[in-house]
Image 1: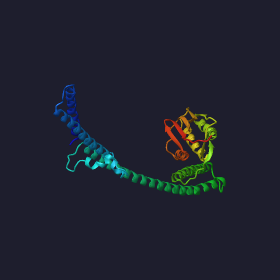
Image 2 (image 1 turned 180 degrees about the horizontal axis):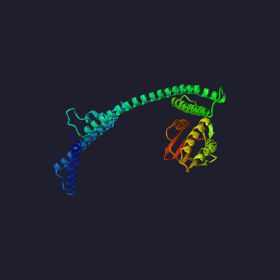
Image 3 (image 1 turned 120 degrees about the horizontal axis):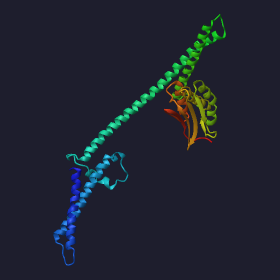
Image 4 (image 1 turned 180 degrees about the vertical axis):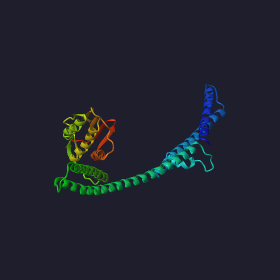
Length: 332
């Protein structure tokens, strides 16, 4: 039987009872006697309405409870009145399906699909995590190997430039100097990659000292101004002296801000101005660099992000603005 039919049958005794009440009101006046059949109809309607309402309510409640998954919660110490009649509330094996059966079938399919998807997601996450660790190890090993090979190049170049074993012309000296600068730059890039791999592996230790952000940021002002002058970029800093302290490694934090802010200044359009501000918002400290380019992915920026993330900070980037936010608790 369909749910709509059950609800309609539950209403029918109430309709009959309404007319019976009207009849009783008519015959209930003084010196009038209600016919016996009216009283019988009223009693039958009341009892029938109670029975149908109880059965339909029990049926719908049990089906909805089962649909919500209550049956999988385990046995209770004290069964509720509803649980006593659960078996009777369920439809028989040969009963035709109703609307709740259709909903239950859809929910069962969706539940099975979600279970399978969650299992697949856990497997994929495990595979991805394992591969990330593997890539980090490979990157660290490759960086160490390349660094050793670069040392073999840099040292002879340094010896040739500092100790002349023969006469070198000006062009030869310039080529050797360019080669040395290139090897030193390559060594620095490899060093960044090695630190990124170590941070991803959790193999790089970070101190937890109380660091004054205001002093740290102010110490970067001369270098940022010097980076901006050759390309016509002005740098304005508004750093309050009373910024809260953060727990972290001062050397690594300074390196991260230096990499991030110098990148923004060096890649800004000529003639523009970079405004670097800091403010306290509740339990957070936000450092903003306005009117600068959004940093792209390179070893310097990747290392800066990871160091800041390791200190509990977040880096949000948009066109023209980069925001570094430290969450509380913060020191005084």
